[in-house]
Amino acid sequence: MRMKRIFSILLAVVLTLGSASAFSSDVINSKFEYVLWQIEDNSLFTQDTEMPREQIDYWNAYLEEHPEEFDRVVNDYLATLDSHSMYLSEQEYDEGFSQLVGYVGVGIGMQQTPEGVIVSSVNRSGPAYVAGVQVGDKIVQIDGQDASQMTSSELAEQMRGDVGTQVRITVERDGAQLSFVLTRQQIQQEYVSSQTVADGVEYIRIEAMGSEGDLEDFKAIWNGLDEKNTRAVILDLRSNGGGLVDDAWGMADTILEQAGVYMGAIQWREDQGGLEKHYSTGGGLPLNKLCVLVDGNTASAAELLTGILKEAGGAEVIGTTTYGKGQGQYHITMLDGVSRLVITCMEMQLPQSGGWEGVGIAPTIEVNGSTSVSDYLQDLPVLDTTATLKYGQQSEQVRALSGRLYLLGYTAGVSDVFDTTLLSGLRAFQQDQGLTARLVANPQTLQAVQRAAQELDNSQTLLDDAYNTALSLCIEAAAQPQRYTSLADGSWMAA
Image (cartoon, rainbow, N blue to C red; front, top):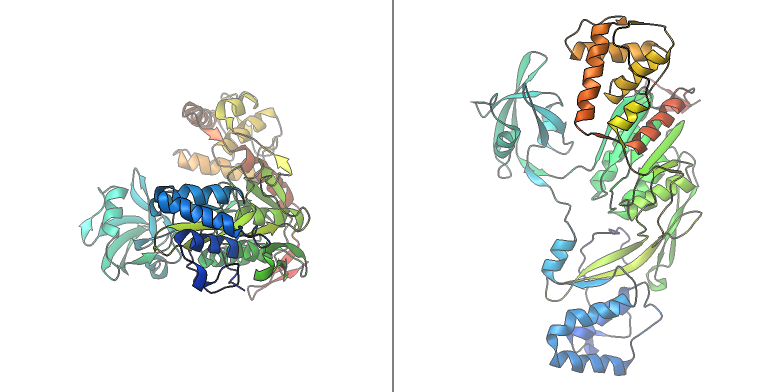
């Protein structure tokens, strides 16, 4: 049986002659017969069919006279099998399948700010992470040069170089300067990230499933949720085109609480193993809520993960119907070393609904499109900027304030009650605006809130309706009792 760790969207493998099919190596006498042998030996849809010998002879003769027609003839035949199989030249393959590759550097992302360039992300596979560089560090020197006037692009240029070479950076953190000597290395792109977005609510973004490292990154994030007393999770799979199917199985297994739950299967050809079923090992963190965000570009392995969590894990799926790619392909390099045969070799199945090829996975809550800031503000009460709102107050004016602070990112939801959550967001806003942090929202503060909301409206920003729907559900769920207890040794115990 061939190895089962495959990309459902991207895999490059070189298969050699010598397996069972209608052909054998001593009777393959043309390029067309070689490609046909690979098709009949690997396609999910040719395990019980063979092209008649007279038809093979016809195409051999035709292509001998018209060699320029080779690609068209092969692709016309592949189109009769399924919609994903194709024969591609080197250029067509490179244009059609983006390689998930990294770069040589130190593994940090940077953001330009009025105060200078700060570290906006630190790649966990890079030397900067190992050395202790942190998000929020301001870069003040690079290789002894003053970096205060450099742009993020200029710094990025100097950060990169040959593998094994070194760069010294000095950062400012909490008023002190720290220096790091970093050795450049190959950095793999990270596609998994997370952040706490409200009390007990974690947002996890998976952009692709490009390597085993993405699964390990996900496991590290998920297994650390108990330390944050996480009670609800938003898992964002929008525009995730898939990748390693094994990543999807592994991520689902990490999440599911119960052992022995049927997660679905892969249907291979009978001569490659037939139906391969998957069951959970259990032990996932007991959450109050899991919301999965999807859209029309959520495809393949990302759809598999979505479907498992929906049908076996009871997750809320929010957004629009997914792409509908439920089949996986081998990407076989041909004898010329450059052209590729992309051939459908398996079909994924969900635990309840089975295959979703050409159909997609429907959300449990359909949210289509975005809302403009103007439309959002129209649904809020008009803010009276001459009033003073006090802690403990309950009114429409409190809703007008909390709704605008939510819009600006200072609160996790909208409320009629001036409670401690609203007070915390209000004080953070006051500090950011250079105002005195108070226990009340005085006219000066309310005017500043109104201006900030108006500036956001003028920028024509669109609000993420699917995310906001998930956030509201997760905040509500996180307010319920926690289903586990964190232990001193870093583990947890179910409540």
